[in-house]
Image 1 (cartoon, rainbow, N blue to C red):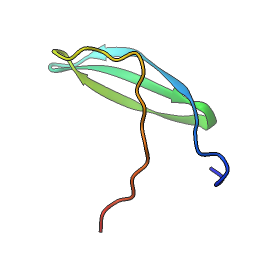
Image 2: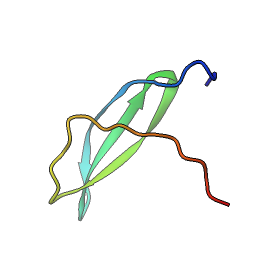
Image 3: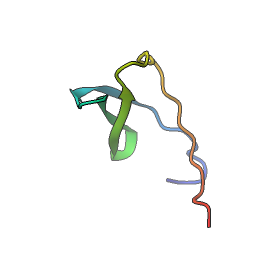
Image 4: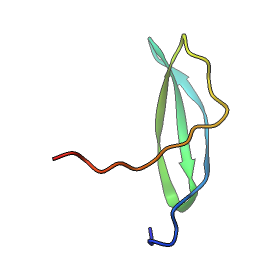
Length: 57
């Protein structure tokens, strides 16, 4: 990703339930994919915003 492109947008959709979590598949512009696990007893948000943080040494 170039320095100029600081934000990408995508969607997350329900995939399946595990014992304690709802699992959502994440699909973002540029081929970024992943999973988000939300506890079953939590409210499911309409929007999730993420920010990159560097790994601590």
